[in-house]
Amino acid sequence: MTAIGPAGPASPRFRDQPALKVVLVGMLVFLLLFPLFLVHETIQERHGRHREAVAEIGFAWGRPQALVGPVLVVPYVEDRRDSEGRVTTIRHRLLVFPERLEVTGELAPEVRYRGLFEAVVYRADARVRAAFSRADLAALAGPRARIEPRSAFLAVGLTDPRSIDPGFALAVDGAAVATAPDSTLRIAGLSWLRAAMPVDAEAGGRDFAVAFDMRFNGSEKLQFAPLGKETRASLGGAWGSPSFTGAFLPAERRIAARRFDASWAISWFGRGFGESWATGAAGDPSGALEGSLFGATLLQAVGPYRLVERAAKYGILFLGLTFAVYFLFEMRGGLRIGIVSYGLVGLSLCLFYILLLALSEPLGFAPAYGMAALAVVVQASLYTAAVARSIRRGALFGGLLAALYAALFLLLGLESYALLLGAVLLFAALSAVMYLTRRTEWSFPPTGG
Image (cartoon, rainbow, N blue to C red):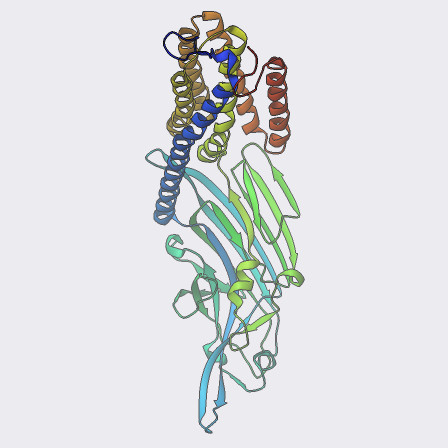
């Protein structure tokens, strides 16, 4: 019986027990998930601070805007009798939308900064022309309604009206009508302006035209509402990366490096509401109105936070492939690399994402990626050369790591084909590992004498 002790046979070398090393490396990868988790938390925290800075800039300059109107608002009352025979008078409003609506918007965007963070703001010039047709207001309000035509007014809604140029006024049939803030309309979360507009209810209303020009500030996004039975809108500005958002896409659009122009032609069939809305009727117009908004968002170049977060999702893959290279160095080169060395290189790979995040904020993503990757490749290569006692192996490891970072950068730039390229690269890497370890005895504990 063989004695085990100081005088006994030497402990089996690593090459005789590769399965044990694989288990230890797997446990190390599991432990390194914690720093990767901290990386993700840091990315989210910085992204949250960026959103706060954008909101602060928007609050000071002007929030994302939605311009809605004009709308003819006609008050009416209804008498309701309860179960005890008492009569209660209830006040409602009839919202009448235009027959035709034309909206033109021109944006002058610029970038504002709060520390390291930036936000896109704009100065908007809007031109609105609307035509109202005569309507049977009593029929629209209902048989029990009593119209109050002398209290009727025109209303225009805007998300954030603080920056509207002074002196703004509506023109009705060419005659200017003074406007004032309205605190009684609460529709779609908008702030409303009102202009007196008496209506001859007995004659069933009358045809009239409304026109106004409005200048105001906003940030990131501008939207309109398709209030007309026929709505035509156009929007343009000196910005090369718009995103057309909302319920309707433009019928025509032209996007150049420094400017975009888009136009919409929308009928009332798909907007979700009719030619009028009685507030006493069932339902709330706010949801339908908000759901019909359309317009454009001024996108910035893809923000560093989303790209860094996408890069960090490949952290486990980088750890696995890097450790596989170390494993092959041991298997093919007869080296002995301690598990602590695996861990230090793994921490270096995790540090890459913190460097990338920190450098991306002042420099932008592409320069930051190159600098962070170069720093980690040089650090890990020099350490590997020292551990492996071979400059050639250190250079080989550095080249493989640089190729991995180059492949990751390519993946981040391919939105549509990222999955395909990633799957091909993973298949190729696994095939290489399988080929290089095809003669390895994986039994645990090892068989053989």
